[in-house]
Image: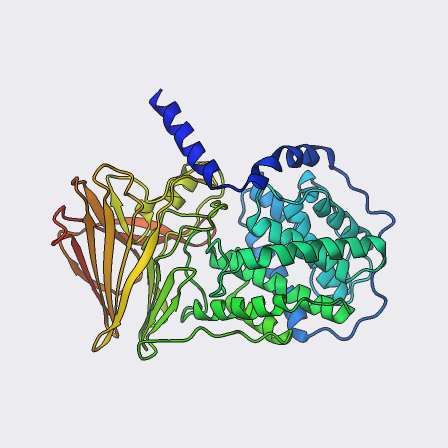
Length: 505
């Protein structure tokens, strides 16, 4: 009975965050997905007969995506839904004008998300010289148009818009105009909602941010080359998004792995920035403060501290989008630290997208560089892509110090417990050290633990209270474990004591 009440409660808390369209659109979408198993590709709108020469960066990006996709696909478990999806992404499509057309061999081919990605890649291949893909593009675009993912919204619906707009940009005729019009309307509707004023995507995953940013660069280039009118808001959005990508680019050229992020799951930062430049889209850079050591992405809630020897990114913002929590991790106030260009304090990464124990572990607070209270998660993550109550984190203050910068932040993810505990964290970042003070303020005392996950080859020196160490792992790429050390210390119930870490390099 208690389990039933718990399940009902978290389901209601999850539904409370959704928009009505997400609930109302689910039954018809489920019905259509069963009916539309073999959309025809005949009577396809013709593609443009001639094009101006495409930017070299567009060709290079298409080839890099083909290579990345093949590398990733080789690691995904046979029979998994994720592999079935990615097999339909058009991995055989590069910039070359040779090779066989796509093969639609799986029911996933007509699912709207993989069909959207495929439509975009087919359109780019056509822009780069392919001439044998008209029917394949029609099948993909028709699959998307008849199954718009209004029940999900978020990055899925934005990808639907990109796929349709790209298909409509490279073709001509009444159906092509329908694709272009539908795609444009989706982008006009969703871009202001999904891209924050600081340039970040609202699901707060750098991987999905970069994939969508690249798609926007592609549609702007394709539409401009085809003579379609590009709304002024699109390039303005992309420039801010590129600026965000530049801001979160770590010293090794990668990015933080907060929420669902894997380095093999999306394009690299430098590849997207190069694509943007090739399409005439320069990033709007995020201004630095505190003598150049501090950058704040206020809407995303990420804060970046840097020095010649170290680079830190702190997640002190909302846990994902308000009505799309599929990629949320319970990681409020977590951080990653690079030292001498290498990851030293690491995020756990992503070990699974399935509804299994590995997925629960991936999203749990205990595997992130933050504090657990009473063994609970800071956000109520459940199933594979669900979340009920959310932690609300915020930056209280930032201030320069003689050698760096100090940051104070807190979150209320445990305030539902009796006594309303609040996790408060202070970090002091300098050129050669990082100190972390964790406190849990609560009217009711709870056992609490602060954890740090270090790359196994890290040379960081650490000090603190009674610290225990254990061997574990982290995932730089999806489900690809690397060794790590996890340091744990208790957080004193006395807020004046809490837990203290000092990391030196």
